[in-house]
Length: 318
Ligand SMILES: [Zn+2]
Image (cartoon, rainbow, N blue to C red; front, side, top):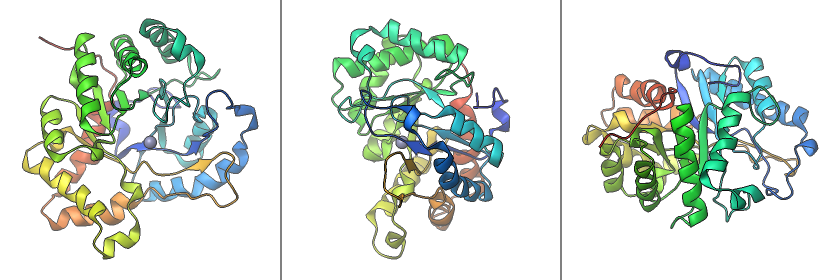
């Protein structure tokens, strides 16, 4: 489900599964979309998306949740202007110390929160008819009862909508807890994208991928170009993580992206915008040096996104 409506999963093509174009860090109590300068943002974002498209990208997932700058009309305009297929999301982000959670996230139970998200799936988000293409939540480790409620609400929403759950998580302890909650709710591991899995161990990547969840190595936009020349453990780490997954025949459960971008509302004139090109300029050449084939790359950037984000209820089987 893109900001321009439903497409066959087959037509996603080359996809970047975790990127951002617009953010507002003001916090849920202060954020005000009326203040956003969408015209200015559009001008700054557009060339980066054109550069992304020139790398062959056809689709990307904009992972900015509600109350941090989810901006569906801007996404639609960017999609119309570039021809890129863009997905937005429903859900709440509890990480960053709950600064981006509205009051009702505290007051309501998981069913009630899910009801809000399911309503967005049916009717559109933020007063538009633009529908979400996935569920995005954010948690911190160890999961508080509030954050466990977000996971449960995501599971309930998944069962009603078939939308995949993209859970900002970090280290593996969070992913294990998420999988337990999904199982309690009767949702299969395949519905979960373990987001920011690069903060987890290589052993846990293998273990969680074997359970069926998606292992999302998605911070590649934050590798500094200078690291490429020198002794970057960061670039090397990504390569070793991917090699480990390939050696364990788990590339079919692996996702990659940049977590790059973005225009920040309220920032000074110089926006520290990270391009969406590191995968093409740094990662793929390194992977090819260690024996990754064209088919492996296609698996990561075309086949897996199609499998991971196709709208489909994934039920847990006992
Ligand atoms: Zn992100």
